[in-house]
Length: 114
Length: 114
Image (tube, chains in turn red, green):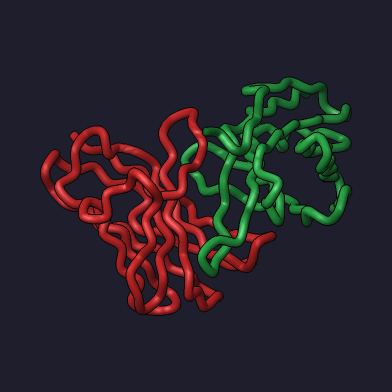
């Protein structure tokens, strides 16, 4: 399957700062990448679909001005959490899709906002 | 509205026996169903999937059964091994706006006892 990396693996920041998370598809050219968030002991929730060369599609309830997504190439998508607050602390995971029956996930990024 | 449900938050099974993880869904338009295994602070690892037009798919120790009339699927692991201990998520995918979107259940924590 596709190999997906994320950087950083964990980040701690102060409230009010912005944090950028990178998602790279190492061996798969991804026109579409997905960003998920998982709170402790909860399910993975799709935040947005990242489209190469165009605007991301956000799920209902996700603030697009707070979670900025850029998909500038077929191998890189970035998620920037702007003006982060403690309630944004979560595990953020990206994935690339091979079709309806396959999706490959990155290792995730643990964000802690103090 | 939880479209994909895993009603058992946890399951304990003796090593060598069968593990059966269950998942229910409400949307009859899902095209594929998938099972993922997840360890803490890591991204999900794809295990097995099944198309909505099939009722069984097998891959080694893993078999997924789909009962469309009951909107129910299950993952069977035989024989269970201690290394199978993890959280298992079922997911369903549907083709929406030109791409496949995935909806995840809340997960079942499997513990295989040696």
